[in-house]
Image (tube, one colour):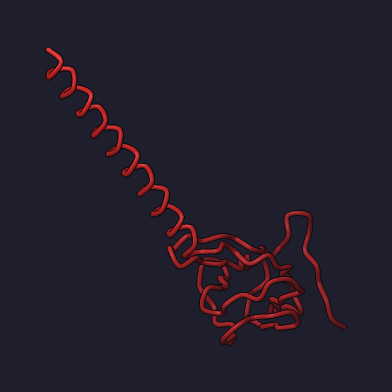
Length: 131
């Protein structure tokens, strides 16, 4: 009889160790995946209309962003900013945007997650800069 009880305890012990190892493995894998993508840069961006045909997107400060992670769309069509390498404070780009168009600046993670960083016109009204 004792022999059956010992076997049962051995099986329970093996199952517990297996569950612990699987759980620890899942934690490690989740940690590695989280480390691959630090998230969107913590930066201030601006999108402003500078004249009737163009908007300007600019990095106002904060974390640098890799240019290949940024995309600018005007009414859903991607536009070229000309940015290369890291985009840092003071970097600006001018893109064509007809009156009434909506421009959006996105950041895309290594995993393909897309985050909206800035939109023009702003929800509380558009800004016009320049002379």
